[in-house]
Length: 194
Ligand code: GRF
Image 1 (cartoon, rainbow, N blue to C red):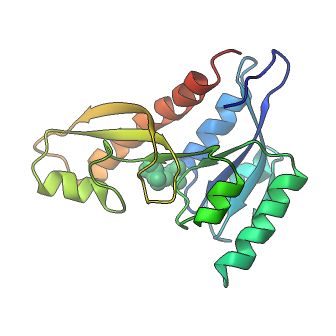
Image 2: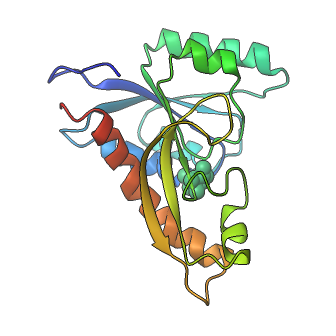
């Protein structure tokens, strides 16, 4: 990863598809004086995503793509990222799989947050699966994105206890709270020279 000097913040793009609570949390983090990132661009595949409102509120440029064709959509996204000199992508509930070429073209500087202790429970419905398997612990993971879903190198994880009375909803809520701590921490870990 690129080393930063004291004055340069990493131009970052966040990709979302839904509520955007992690996006909001990353915006707040980026606004801290000593934060290593500056969020310049929001990308979404969903024009109804609730989280789009945060782009408006914080005057962050947003671009929405309909993904009729992945190849041509990704080309458009890449050109937008280049135009804005984006150096880091943070996926935060982005429901589209990025192609190998896209990931390669971005030289691995793509992070994701996932609501389980990877490598356990890649993909969707992580909380349902953890509860069904009677796991006692779940959690969340920030990892690099590679061409296999939820399989890139792990940067940081946080464990969360599962209680007997937990439902997928109650567990999701507790884990999401930890996600909001973990994502900024992981970013700081990567760019700790600031
Ligand atoms: C989070 O649980 C995240 O781990 C997963 O999708 C969810 C997004 O939530 N990848 P939000 O849109 O940030 O509120």
